[in-house]
Length: 101
Image 1 (tube, helix red, strand yellow):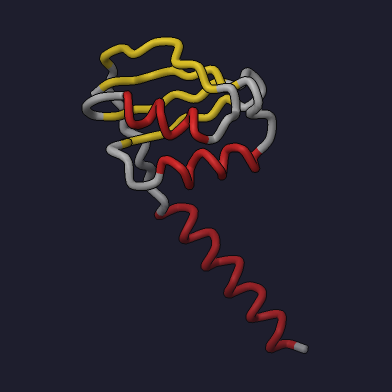
Image 2 (image 1 turned 180 degrees about the vertical axis):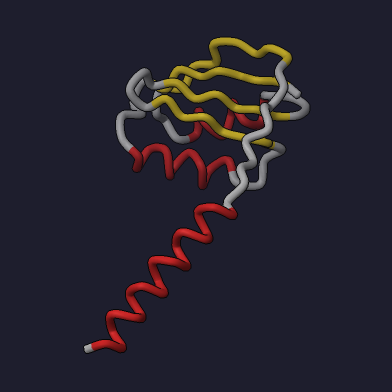
């Protein structure tokens, strides 16, 4: 896996993030990390970076490839059981209040 970092000078709000996500949809990308305040995008990908670089340049947001290094994605999967249990509890409490009126 490779991590390529881009500086995107005109990326200053979530709307540019959405444009980039849509443009890169379908590419061989594992993960995108956006750092909007610093105008940086980290792309975790397999294979050649050229198609990704060209897609970003097509957006005309001032995209510059800074570097590409070997990297691994850390396991970001979380256990949502506690959150799910809490949401069900809140839902049941709200339902109880609705019935008591």
